[in-house]
Amino acid sequence: MVDTLDASMLKRDSDAAPDSDEDGTNVRGGLSSSLSLRDRLLQIVGKFSGKRILVVGDMVADQYIIGTPARISREAPVLILTHEHDFTVPGGATNPGVNASTLGAEVFLAGVVGDDVAGEQLREKLREYGVRLDGLVSEPGRPTSTKTRILAGGTQLVQQQIVRVDRIDDSELSESSKQQIIDYLRDMIAQVDALIVSDYENGVINPAIVEAFLPLAIEQGKIVTVDSHGDLHRFRGATVLTPNQPEAEGTLNMRITDRASLEQAGKALLDQTEAQGVLVTRGSEGMSLFERGRDPLHIPASNLTEVADPTGAGDTVAAAFTLALTTGAAMADAAHLANIAAGLVVRRLGCATTTPDELRLAIEQLTED
Image (cartoon, rainbow, N blue to C red; front, side, top):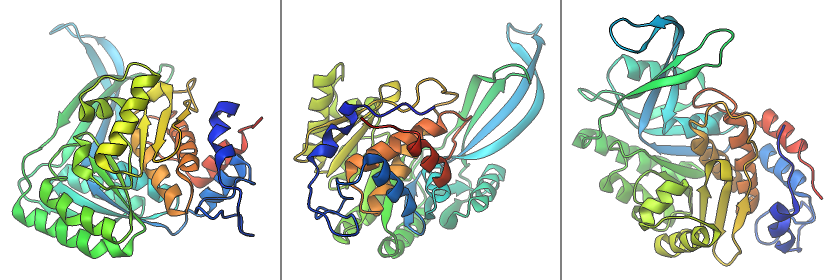
């Protein structure tokens, strides 16, 4: 069950501009405040179809090996698992792309995979989601980044992760790969509604590539959402940043310990990066939105009771938030929608996605004072 919205979550809505056109759009570009939050969110979801999103970043194949505990090994004090099944799902920068695709967008990826089995498995999964792979470069000799999670559990047991093995190559891309990505980005920026930068610090988001796409996207007025594990100062002028709390702390070299330090951090990120908005995700404590000239908006997590796996929830936030902005939604409404989407995907194992129908149902379950 999705938690209800309380009055504190709706405070910012009462500050919205009252002037609106007949179609419900206010003069500031968002939906009219005469509509309830529920109705605004439903209208936003209805406009997702056909939006075009370009995702650039580090592609990762998330591999899962599922086994049933059999006994304790005689070789070491560890479990022996009987293999049940295994599967691969899109991870890293592919995950916001897949999330945007399942929400109705046409998605284009730009990045690097290896010329190997993991790379082909990842490509096959992405084709199943209808994601465009023209900008996905295969670099000979470079392994596809993989994160292999081994889970133990049976038909009557909750599956629990017992170990994760990462195979990550964060070395410099070849000049050929960099140039192919740069050429693709320069060609595609004019053809999309928004860019999502998904930086896992695996080598794709390097200075040459950032310099190739960011100024051009800003010049053409494109929405640019940055979800980066690294220093956010590199993306000066982006539309919005969506760091989690540790990422925000790392960029600012400060600790966030209470509401005051959180708001200090949000203001500092706005000032230092010249972004229009900063959405800090805070796990079980929800998320906080900072915009220029507006009071901070703190949103409680929409789901605290049915969390199966938080993996990839930040990618879902970036995808849903960006898609909402492409419809002309206000950032506050986009943040509410992203919060609901994240609350849905954490109920599922691995990097999961949600659909417009699931979002609509969750929105309709919300009540307002």
